[in-house]
Image (tube, rainbow, N blue to C red; front, side, top):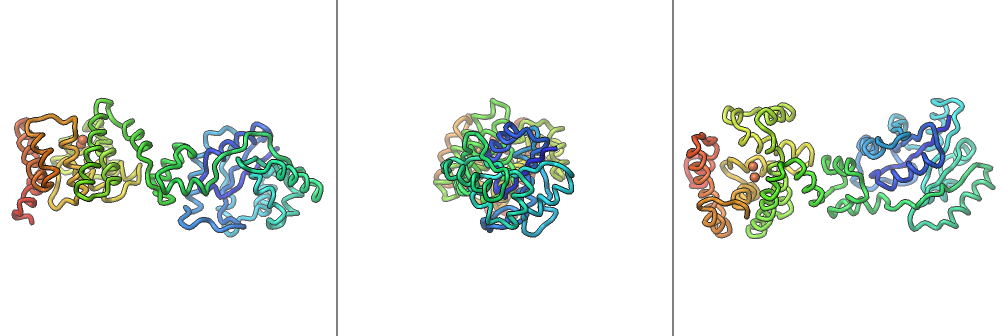
Length: 389
Ligand SMILES: [Fe+2]
Ligand SMILES: [Fe+2]
């Protein structure tokens, strides 16, 4: 049996790791290629704010699970402590008696292998195969492999493949700036966003793609308009345009669902609809949208609350909540009697615009024979300085 061990911190696992795994499977044709995220790297300190070993394991699951022949292995997590490769190879030898073990490493690692813990054990009990990295010195690496062969009598070689781009350090820096998406698979990036790993600032083009896929196509221009308006209103009133954009992009993310779908989402996210909401998919999409935005896209509480209140409003709204409510109301594709007045007012006096919006909405709903949710009246009273204040 031929086993390849591909270890590392995978902090985060990226497309380059996938390329290395695929190339190793192609070149070495092993029975299994084990992806072995470390618990605690022996030779370096993980960057501050790095995810837990369990979170890195989960990211690895997402990164490699569709590669035939690759298998996730939590051996180093279960062992805990410093993750010495020699210990892992010993465990693998017990788990797979008689197997030929191969260690897959980046070429930079190949050059430092002799300084690892128990190098003699590693080099006498495993073949070494290295994958080249972009910008690496091929000649130096070939020389390194030759030295390992000559000094230790081990079987060390560089896999013949395109050098892999990207390193985790650069990706972590890019994530902080809203980049990194092109170097990560969608599934990995989605989990990083959802769990807010690496202090990620979600990439807006990526978020738009995801959110629009949840909409009926005819609603997309409305959501685009809402985002543009929310950003403009934020600039006018001093809110964070990024948070406003995220909230606007996601504000109708469950709107496509009819009432049964909304009620299913309520169950999934532990939402208890009130009597008004139980009868109305229009009211529920604000609540379920906030829950989905939180659960799937890891949005901040402020953003989730802005989505939560975009339909009815509520007393004592935050600036961001008012902005999303108003942007939804006056975005450029909206066309109804009074919209121009509301647009004008929204940039002169936001609270006055909120009052007018709540009044217009109340009248509009009643004209269709729909009883407005009482919280909208409370919102209006609050703004008027009425009894709820
Ligand atoms: Fe909506
Ligand atoms: Fe909307």
